[in-house]
Length: 322
Image 1 (cartoon, rainbow, N blue to C red):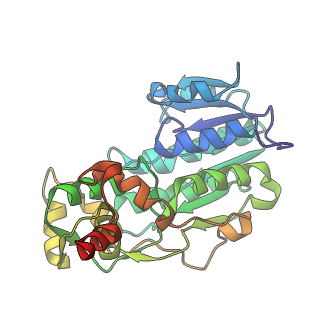
Image 2: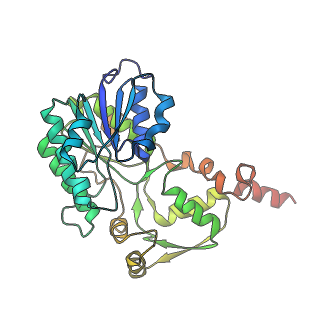
Image 3: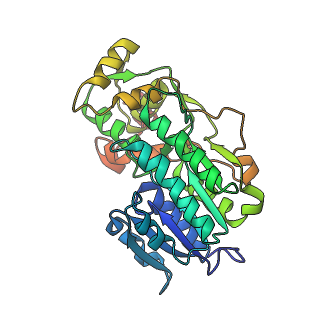
């Protein structure tokens, strides 16, 4: 437990706390001694957190964030609030725009001391991507209702059990030749534990961090081509990558049952990097960690012989010696 945290024994409602990022945010808050209510459509997804909490430190609430009464019940008694809800399907302007605004309004009326809203890099009210419009609307509505809220905009979040590195890891494991969409698009991948730490730090000191926007990116900018190449190298596999023209990528994204939607392609094209116009990890006192610190270890599962497989370097050395 983090000693002398302002969050110790405070009650925090975490909307979307049963999701991927929510799992890490919850752990960061539990370590600080906070008492949590995980509010989610499917709170059972957060039950894996139970062994990490002390008796009475963790509770779960089934919540429909589009319903006023459901929000009021989830926010009852809360000292602080974190909103992590994000989606690529459904009514995105409702889920990521109107609903967070209602959370913030109710939270403010209930005397909540701090509100952290997790958005994403690149919100744009005029974007052709409904995801970007939804994120922009959410930030607007939250700050309108709770001016002292903290807005966090992470780039693409990576971690051991994410849906980003592992999707590419599986494809690279199986396919000798792979297309790369948006090969030159730059991403500033950010480690999920660093994002979770940012949420906790912002919540601990709303007087310092409230009313500000933080863009959260990792320490390096990598193109989509470079990311694919690094994953292949970490697996110890030689793969051929084909850079796809934008026209082909757009047609692919428009097709049904593909792993990339039209919105995701629209968001990928300009990349996802820190703009330099807002605060960053530095103002939170956090040094973000690079992908290279973890990738070799995480890609063991995709190597030919798992953790017993040889790395590229060792394989080359053995080849020279034989």
